Amino acid sequence: MIAIPHEFEQSTVAREGEKGAAWVAELPFLVEELLGRWECVPDGDVLHGGVGLVVPVRGAGHGPAVLKVSFPHPGNVHEPHAFAAWGGHGAVRLYARDDARFAMLLERAHTDTLAECGDPDEMVVVAGRISRRLAVPAPSGLPRQSERAAEWERRLLVDAEEFEGALPRRVLEAALATVRELGPGQPDVMIHGDLHPRNILRADREPWLAVDPKGYVGDPAWDGGTLLKSMGLVFIGVDDPGKEVHRALDLFADAAELDPVRVRRWGQLHAVEAAYWARRHGFRRARGGPELDRLTALAEHLAQALTA
Image 1: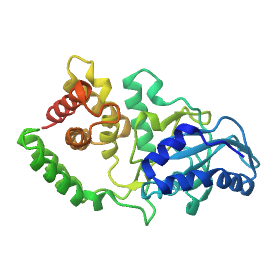
Image 2: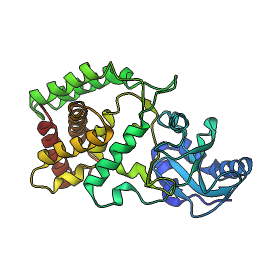
Image 3: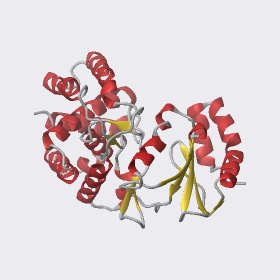
C-alpha cells in the first residue's frame, strides 16, 4: 500500500480540515482499489500537486501512466471532461476515469515543466500553440465562462469601492468594459482555464502536453491572462515591464492565432484582478512586507500599461 507524502497530507488537512483528514486517511485504500480495478502497479515515487495525489503506474493496454486522485472539490469536477474532449491533442491522454472518486488514469508525461525551460519567449509561444490546439468545440454540460461575467463585474465594483484610489479610474473602467463587452458573448470552445507554464509538461509523444485543466468553455484569449499572471516575476526585473508584457501577449496571440487586442483586454482584466487580490489577500509567495509591496506595484503597473 502506498505511503501518502507528509507535505501533501499536511497541506490537505490545513486547507480542508476534518474532511481533508478523513479523505487522506482513506486515500491509500482508494488508490489500492483503483490500481486493482485498472490492472496497474506502482512504478515510481508518489508525487502530488496542490489538491491531487499522482502515482506513476504501469499496466496492460497502455504505456507509462499515472493514477491521479484529487480531493473532491467543485473546481476538479470537469477535469476529465476536458481530457476526453481533447483526446490527447495538446494534452495528456485519458485512459480511464472514476468521476465519483475524482480519479483518473492518465498518460504519463515527464516531471519537468515549461516553467523550467529558462526562456520566457519559449514559454509564451509554446503556451500559445497549446492553447490553439485545445480550442475545440465544447461538449454540453460544462461551465461557461460567460455565466461568470456578472460575478466578475460585481467583484470589480466591490474591490474598487473598498480600495478606492488603488488604480486610476480609466484602468478600472477598461476592465469593466472588457467584462461587459467580451464576458457575455464568449465562444463555445474548450479552454484550459489555468494555462500557465507549470501546467505544461515535457513528454515523449509530443514535446509538450498540458495537464490540470479546469474544463471551462469560453474565449481562448482569456487564457492569455492566466499565463500573464503566472509569469509576473519574469517582468519584475526588466527595464520596461509594460513594453515586455505587450510583447509577450502579442507573441501568445500570434502563436494561438488569436486577436491580439482581445488577448490584451483579457490580460488587462487579469492584471486589475491581481492588483486588487494582492491588497485583499496577498500572494502565495508574499503575504506581506516589502515583497508583497513590490508584487502589488508590478500588478498595478501592468494593469495601467495594458489599458488602451
